[in-house]
Every structure is written in structure tokens, then in C-alpha cells.
Image (cartoon, rainbow, N blue to C red):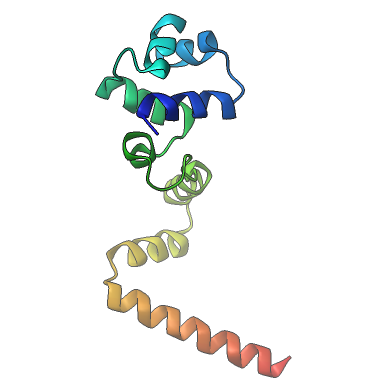
Length: 124
């Protein structure tokens, strides 16, 4: 499948017309039509705009590998922003500790949580 065919697949899956799809990324419906038909290539700038505007995975769009859409972390990032802007030092310090922890530290924490859950389940 070509990149143009993948763009058409994105547009169809979002149920958008050529015009509406093009408007979102700042190009005409004719430009989108030509790209979908393989008459014109997709610029890097346009590729990035499609990924940004529609939540499309860059690797999938450029190579066809992986999934079409990426999972959005926006809600998660908003929560972290609120915690870091808030007054709870305990929550802030927990996030800072996780960010600065090594892979080995995170793996140890994961094992500790597993042990805790096992003990809790045995109690219940």
C-alpha cells in the first residue's frame, strides 16, 4: 500500500471528505486527491500535519508498519500537569521519583507491588 493509499484509508476511516480532510491540514481537496491517486507525493510537512491533526502514527503513515492511530496521552499529561501545579508535595515527589528512577528501580517497584497484591489477595 502506498502512502497515498494510506492517507485515503485515514480519510475514509474518519468519514471525511477530501475538502474537510484538506482543510484540517491546510491544503486543497485537489492536493489530497492527487496524493491519494499517487499523482503527487506527500511532503514531510504534510505528513507531520496529518499525524498531528488526526492522531495518526508516523511510522504507519510513512511505512505501513504498526497501527494507523496512536493512543492519545493527552488526558494523562493533563493529570500530571495538574499534579505538578498543585499543592500536594507527596504526589509531586512521587512523580519526580518515578521520572528519575532507573529501569532497575522501576522493576524492583513492580516486584514490590506484585508482592503487596499477592499478600492482599491472600488476606481477602
